[in-house]
Image (tube, rainbow, N blue to C red; front, top):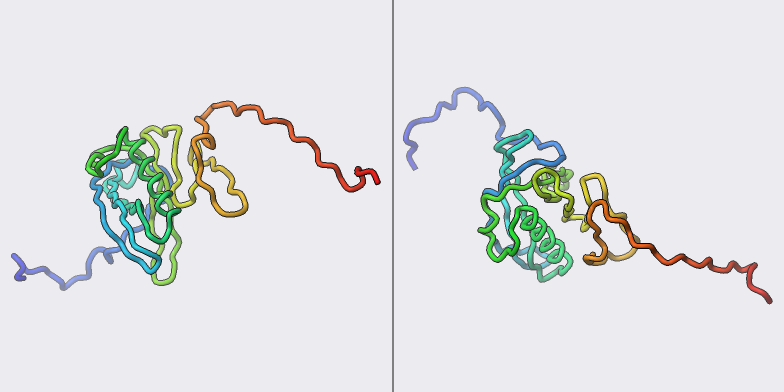
Length: 196
């Protein structure tokens, strides 16, 4: 293709084309696009939703954040479950009561918690969207990759040993809710308490 006018390449470019990482934290975003795409890896095939989030504040205005959310996966039902919950959280916090088409998300505003994925192998460190919440710091948030749900950015439900389990609605309480009283645990007798 012939360029409309020649580019002057006699001086070095102003940047190397790489973006600096955005510091971890909560950012106000507007969903710029939401498209479905098929993918395939050595672990299986599936579908994911690619959200492009445009930052509107408090800093880094105009920068884009990509979030690829797995919604089906032939090799991992757990990955699909986590992805569907993350997409559900994004829709909920964006004010979409019933999500049936990703186009419903476009133009919606919410907050995204940005994290930094460390460099691995040939890949440099990069930003990733960890969670979504309503503008103004809504009380509910979802932390997708770790599969944990907390009330704010500093609170996380501790992980238990063993394989992960799917959280139910009973596992999550609204902020400020008082937990129901748990039955008292009876002490277990020790070896020296057993009569012979």
